[in-house]
Image 1 (tube, rainbow, N blue to C red):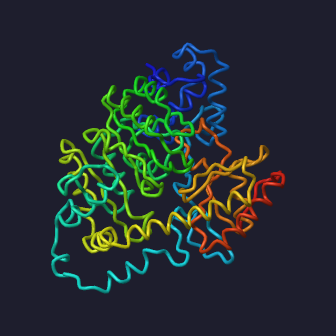
Image 2 (image 1 turned 45 degrees about the vertical axis):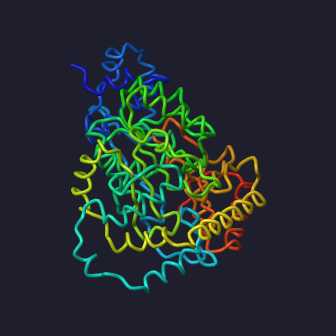
Length: 465
């Protein structure tokens, strides 16, 4: 009998050899295959799939090149999944580096200093009912905090009450809760063909299989989403409609309505990551304002104030609240009410609009530096984005360019980290403009990248000390 994962090949579109590679990856993600498993002989697989042996050989060669398999003489082909980074180097490599500008960080600028800093310091110095916060144990978060977060969403056209809200330990926690509440091991989650690396990590941890949907300059293409829904039967979509990471794509109002219509037609629940929604002026309407019963809307203060608060919040449709409560209590039980209090005070401050305006102005100024320093034809950016995409020359790969930049003291991130499937194989890198401590430092780092663009790729791999 042929193995179960063969069915995945038959339901996957595109060239047959790539469909086989994609099916093996999905089977690994869902547990149908495990590292160390032996793949069937090529001739057997060709017979099962009614393909010629050349197609199967090409698929096996592709898997070998990607490090998915190893061959053992006389025994066959075995799965050998290599360990890869699940985030920018700066998140897991804590080695101190002198004169290193790490533009892989996707955080708000700390220059001048960050306008929310003085407000936060002031809030921390005011009276606080510490006894009440220490004794609080409410899974969804204190009502006063949820009320503040619901009011914040109202600025963007989302109708929400305190009872609709969950307080989370940051946006990544909200993402994990969403996958746990809305899907089961082995389920397919649809997302952009380039997607947040945190989603990839969470899906792998929970045993969910990601399927990428084709994008254009406005994000997900509705026709491609429709085809993916039909092909996979998926019932969950994760997407970032505003300032998509890493492409900076932002959906128009029309595109958003088209995406919602496709999801309604196929009964798909949407996880909307709107962490950058406050940056454009005026802010676009979130999907949650168009389909409140179908969209789980999640955001955090990591892009407004900084990642250290570790507070996020999400609006959850009422019929899903019970499932989310189970996921919340199974993970952290609740978010820290102390951190939620600092976050709420920032959002209640009369200086909030000034903070947002200052952050927008600083980010736009840094994006202008990008356009002044680097060839415009190679840059994909937006005025309100914390990052931009840089296309590497034809003789470079994204990874070799990243390694060469690190050797010159500039940290960047290859798009390969965001690829849902290796079928994409982008030669782009992401560069975060707000990661530099000031505009002068950013300018110097951009000059180094510009100089690197004019050079030829090394003929042998770079080894960093």
